[in-house]
Amino acid sequence: MRVLVAEDEAALRRQVVDALAGDGYAVDDAADGDRAEFLGATETYDAVVLDLGLPMRDGLSVLRAWRAAGIATPILILSARGAWHERVEGIDAGADDYLPKPFRIEELLARVRALIRRSSGRATPEMRCGPVVLDTRSGRVTVGGAPVTLTAHEYRVLAYLMHHSGRVVSRGELTEHVYAQDLDRDSNTIEVFVARLRKKLGAGSIATVRGLGYRMEPRA
Picture (cartoon, rainbow, N blue to C red):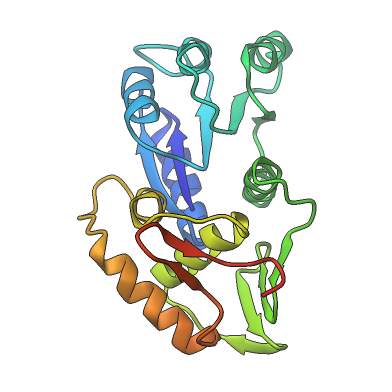
């Protein structure tokens, strides 16, 4: 799963980026509105953390531009605690949630998880596909109750497939959601991650749909 963080305060941006990366996400970041708008319009994200007080172009303008362009990515806006009118404008402009500053990083992580969960039609933080269970709160993966250790990239591939269980996901789509923007993206490595996951989760855990991609069934 992949997230964009648009925040001009360097220390806070780094804290949020590090926390999201530690929670298993591929993360891109932007320090101003122009960069944020460009990334949101040209890259694919599962969620965006958007500060409204960005330089160059304010977050509200960025949000409106994305929504006008038909970009439906779930967006969590950040704003100063007293700026209630900005939060109202943000929600009216198409934001999905807001978080006033200052905030606890744990709450931000929970809200991002909830945004992604709701966008894929999930009601709970625990996802199941047959014997495979992934808890998005802890990042813990089990098969038949036994814990399984995954690398960061294996976890991202599995999380994306489980969030979209029941439908075919192409290698290209997985590539867009597994790698951050500054990493070398090779769709062929997705095959490697899927092969590793099958060894760890069971050969029948991830189906290959020839010529199209991969699919996990909700009740495999």
